[in-house]
Image (cartoon, rainbow, N blue to C red; front, side, top):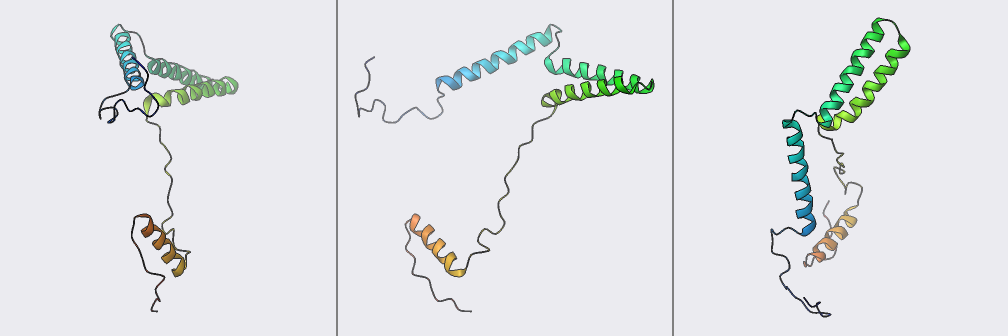
Length: 140
């Protein structure tokens, strides 16, 4: 297939809406393949990563409790730290990650004078094609 000449438009409409590009199709294919693979391993009785982590965490926690009962503080602390490290890795499998949300100021124009507000309004109106009069005389 010959290359497009400079300035030539092969498909003036571009990609048809709803049609996915190659990288999106490949990413979706890999995700489906990973899901099928996990389902096969699960069906064969193999443990998934989250299950292995959960089991390891509980074993460490049980060992920590036993060490606390035997008053072996050094081992109990060590096992507790190991259990908490595993729990930190496991949390991604058990609950969704919360994302921060930026808060907007309640009144962004609170510190502006009336003349500054009118100038801002005039600029915004000009951006959308409206014409506003000069700053009016405000009645107090």
